[in-house]
Image (cartoon, rainbow, N blue to C red; front, top):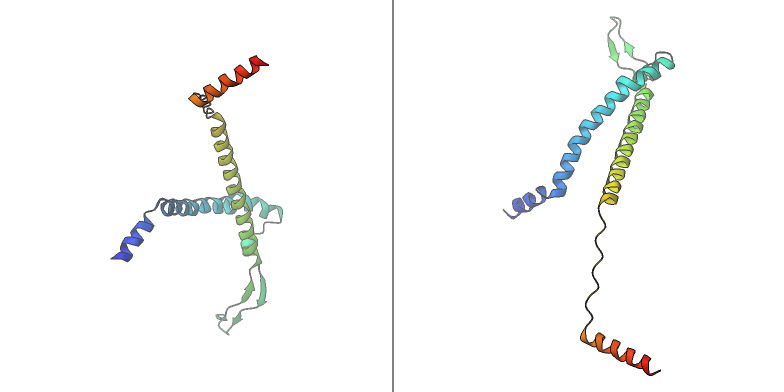
Length: 145
């Protein structure tokens, strides 16, 4: 029973719940960025480089082996560098989007701090009886000189 109570306390902490929400939103955000890269950015780049789809770029290390009927006996071994290029582009755009989002959030947080009124200065505390007596003694000594 102690284990279940510990786990429940851990799972329901605010930080764990915030992290779960972040992971879910991050997954959805990743899908948006992937669509942006695949459907918006890569087609014009592919057009510029001659209609090449980066995910199709590969080097054949060992060609496929066919039997007499033309059926594949052994699949080809390929080096899929185009898929790697695609993932690098995805990562770069995702990192750029996250950077811009954090930069905007920091700017908004800073603006909010600047807009908040400064706290009023604390009033001077009343002098104690000792301080009043010392001030009077000081003034009397100044008068004697």
